[in-house]
Length: 378
Ligand SMILES: *Cc1c(COP(=O)(O)O)cnc(C)c1O
Image 1: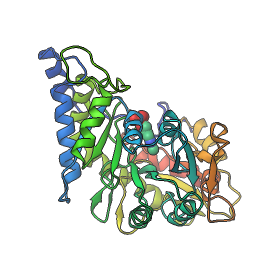
Image 2 (image 1 turned 180 degrees about the vertical axis):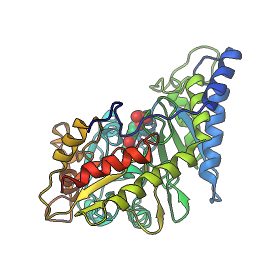
Image 3 (image 1 turned 30 degrees about the vertical axis):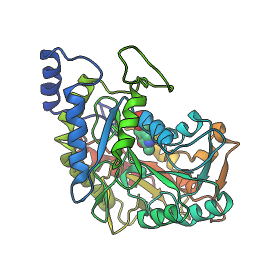
């Protein structure tokens, strides 16, 4: 059996409203960085995140989530030679900005309950590096981390938390939106995320002055003077008004995307009943956005997820290994790694896990065929 059209992990799903906002940008001849769609997207995301919260959030639309992470790093005061405690199992974009500022990553192992940063390993990392003042935490595949514990440890050690919610927009922990837990928070509108602007990101903070500083850096650090006056190094990180229009059209469909993602997750969960397999886990106090459905093969089972990936590929279905932990990446071979277990949890998840097709355009019939292919491997 081979699907005629390839089934992907997660691709953009457009609806129509996107074009209305883009059209307005063209009609008003506003094809520039900055503009009314950027302002609109900033305001609408802030409103979305403020649901169920008393806090007011300030946002800056940027050209990428990675740019937002870089500005978050600068706002946190990270300097050359500093130590930054980072999620280990994540996309490299979470931790690369540490290097942009000349600082050093120390990777903190994951736990099995959410696949995110292990609070016990974070505490151990602070014991070893008491000088660390910044923590960068990602919520993997849209499952919120153990936020109460993480926040308590950060507070105890007087550290700033940067929350990478690039994969977790619309996920909640105890009713609070991901992307609002850190002092500085980041979301992404990259093409494969739960909603997209075709590419882009946003910095979120409750600190208005920090928001203004980020905007200043993102627009080449232009001082308020009639001529081009520069007293700091700047960046060209702003989002285009056209791109922001796509994001605004997508945001209308965010909750609908989330619900469809959950249906996909539940169908896998149901389909795998009786197999030595678990779905990517989450806490009872969390509501994930189910951005990607992933499976983890039980420890004592001999089935190799890479074999499943290859068989799915032959059927013209895309699947992908779990993020390879950062402490295993050659580029970070000089960085320390802190764990509280005998063998790295992130490494075990990487070896036994697989990201499954979670594209919301996939039909139930297609998903059932994919489930049957996977079942036949056991
Ligand atoms: C996608 C992603 C990013 C980067 O966002 P971009 O908008 O692509 O720069 C950062 N962190 C995580 C965890 C991501 O999945």
